[in-house]
Amino acid sequence: MPPLAAPRSIPADQAAGMLRIRKSLSWCYVSAPLYLQVVGGDYQMFKAPGLALQKTPQAGGHLPRQLYIRHQDKLDSILEVQAGVTNHLEQAIAEGGQEEVKVLLVDMVEESFLEPRAENLRGLMPVVKVLVAQYGQQGTAIRELALLANKNYGAAVHAVNVTALTLAYCFKQGFSTEVTAEYGLAGLLHDIGKLKIDDAILNAPRPLSPQEFAVMKSHPEEGLRLIRDQGFSRLIEEAVQEHHERLNGQGYPRGKRKISLAGRLIGIIDSYEALTSDERPYRKPLNTLKALELMHQETREGKFDGAVFKSFVYCLT
Ligand SMILES: [Fe+2]
Ligand SMILES: [Fe+2]
Image 1: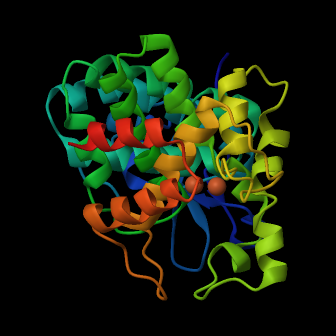
Image 2: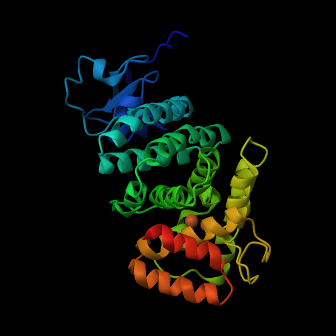
Image 3: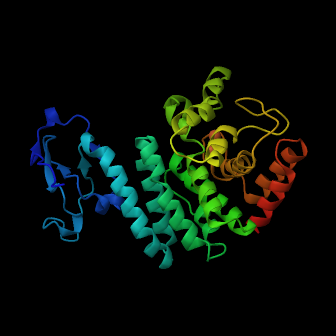
């Protein structure tokens, strides 16, 4: 399909909804035009529709700090960004650029979470498959990916870290490639329902009030609503719905005592990741040993599956 015409410039008063794109992903945008904001707030076209960024005469190896797309180009662009990252990831992993891999993954997941529709979430599977194919051969490298610090700890970093740890677990357990990829995507999507929760609650710089916590507890069901009947496997649905359930019935949202393996495993990895990486003003992250001690205690109290916890600890060594 030939690219649709797009205006060379967009006056400030018609620019509502212009979205800033992530620099690490700017080369992925092909069909959408990219714009630059100029003095006065107007936007000028920097890259025409249908061109890759490297091929624009203006680029010349130097990218402006901030580029924007129009809101109406967002949805198609997410799919393009996912495809671009999928293509580039294999090379980045083979070259051992772990930092680059992490930035690419986090930025791409952040981008996908901006419009958490089923088609965008399904588009994450090819990316997970590349991770499985590339890291499956490399032993501990995927685990190191989870350890790499990121500037802005948030939903995307958490999702990527949980996925990296989950893949490390699956590799160690010798799960098949297909099942491993399902678990990997379950890691990326487990908290997808949090995108429906108010930011003021999600980012509260203090412990939540009982009312706020009640809202927070709705995220597994919200997540399930987003992905149910959209072509995701049962395993992924279970991980989304059950990762906060605990075997002693003290979890949420249902207080279930019978929990799927996906729910038990992602529940353990999610807790570990939150304890070790969660940088909140009122709580410092724990080191690996302290986090595992605390979780061992919780396992004895009947919250976590002892056998799964043990294999998780084993996969960290
Ligand atoms: Fe959660
Ligand atoms: Fe989580």
